[in-house]
Amino acid sequence: MTGSTHTVTNQAPPLVGYDVFAADRALTAAVERHLAPDLAEEARAELSGLGRSCGSAQAQEWGAQANASPPVLRTHDRYGNRLDEVDFHPAWHRLLGKGVAAGLTAAWSRPGGHVRRAAAFLMWTQVEAGNGCPLSMTHAAVPALRADPALAAEWEPRLTSTIYDRELRPARLKAGVLFGMGMTEKQGGSDVRANTTAARPLAEEGAYELTGHKWFCSAPMSDAFLVLARAPAGLTCFLVPRVLADGTRNVFLIQRLKDKLGNRSNASAEVEFAGTWARRVGEEGQGVRVIIGMVAATRLDCVLGSAGLMRQAVAQAVHHAAYREAFGAKLADQPLMRNVLADLAIESEAATTLGLRLAAAYDDGGDAERAFLRLAVPAAKYWVTKRCAPVAVEAAECLGGNGYVEESGMPRLVRESPLNSIWEGAGNVQALDVLRALQREPAALDAYLTEVGRARGADHRLDAAIRDLLTDLADLGHAEARARRLTERLALVLQGALLVRHAPAEVADAFCAARLGGDGGAAFGTLPATLDLASVVERARPVA
Image (tube, rainbow, N blue to C red; front, top):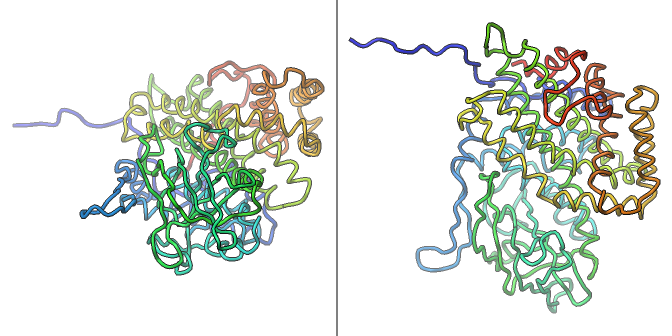
């Protein structure tokens, strides 16, 4: 006779079957704040619909399946002909199709589009971050293509489409396309001016033949790519289609796929060009200037993607602690765990609030907001993406041994967490970009100081941090050696100013105390005990 030897108790139910948008108070407040009143109702309905999809068991299963079954490269067919194709699990295509249909490539074509897309991208990242890469690059290709009005008129309607068409065929026959990007080469990395790919002009106006390699080319099954290559007049931006207008395949030789730490559902490839047809974008020698619009947009997506990963990590930790009991009480009610959760929560809210503020600046489009973005985007990209990994690791620890097990989903968040800090320029690249903006573009600093100045007088710790920052900015001697510290301060002061103006008092108080006032430790869970931490944790709880 057999009997039950173990009954499972004291476990949190799965965090599933809920509206990811409605359950995120920081995100809903930011959308409400930055959208015009006549757009708010439509946007709420749209984002809640996507939020329910994000929180569904089906979407979460697709995310797990796509990560468990990485893409597979097929270089040749059975007869030895070059194919250069990548096979994906069906879940990948379902996710990508859902992301395109949700408007994650359509921000440029509708009012309030960047704020709405930013909120959607932040949520969709929580389901599966890998498919965010082609969605991000497709979205970001638009400002680069606008350097050539004829190209923009041809390609922009396809880029901003809500139709996902996975077939490789001429773009003119497709209702929607995806774009990738190729700048990194083995000898250069972030130093794109070390580019050795050669571009030889052809008889056709604006057409070139490329010869060279790209060491890192993400989403190689995209319909076209923006790449940098060296033309006779210097480094130039080019559009490389996968399939030519006559239906033949362009020369796009996929040498191998990268075996990455995280982001495993997405294919990242090393590719070679050998007589590859390309169309020039903008003028010869202006490649960096043309591509920078795409880079800035993808850097903002790094901020939003990291904010999404942090939000999901914190949501899982708070959800677990609200159910799990130890030593006679719920974890969330125990002072030390409450401190940890609150500390994580304010980091997550600060990232979300900053990311949506940057998206709103894109929607505004005025000179002052463009100047603000010039400094705020690299500072935010530097700081928010660097905070993602420690948040994910600490949140996993909140689940104890459960958080170390793949089925919890936390290891996937941990593996994904460093990506956005590396992609589109690692920390030093961002910090040096901040220095360039400070030294060459005074309007950028003016716009930044105007933004943080709106919160002056509301919190003495923020006021002191602004004064200290101004002292630092007054003397940029030896600036490169201290560029990281200066960039960190710019980001923290901006986050503090936004939270003081827009977040509940308990959130702003905790942030200013720990991040600006020096009343916090180097690890999470070191907030002053006198703060209203219970309210901070409750605000972060994802109520299903």
